[in-house]
Length: 90
Figure 1 (tube, rainbow, N blue to C red):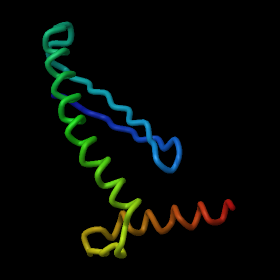
Figure 2 (spheres, rainbow, N blue to C red):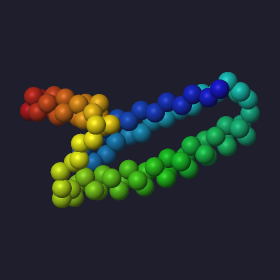
Figure 3 (cartoon, rainbow, N blue to C red):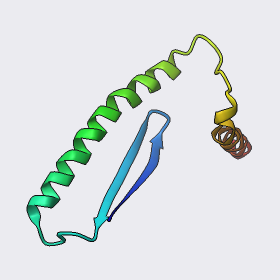
Figure 4 (cartoon, helix red, strand yellow):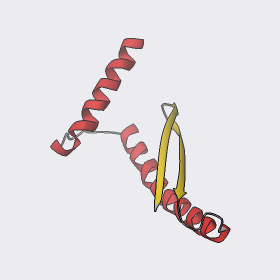
């Protein structure tokens, strides 16, 4: 079994730190397995980074309003609540 954990911490409006780690209960002392898994996760994140950067640029140059879909209800509520909290700090 393998568990993977991911944490994103904002630095400023345009940057975040992305932390991740994995735990496994097989081959714990096998450095070769560790390297293979590490390489695979880094490759997958490198692909994600391309998309995340494009999305970020898209939001920065947004010409139309967001389309709110029913499936996005929970994230939309979160973003609205977070915006309210940020606005109340200023």
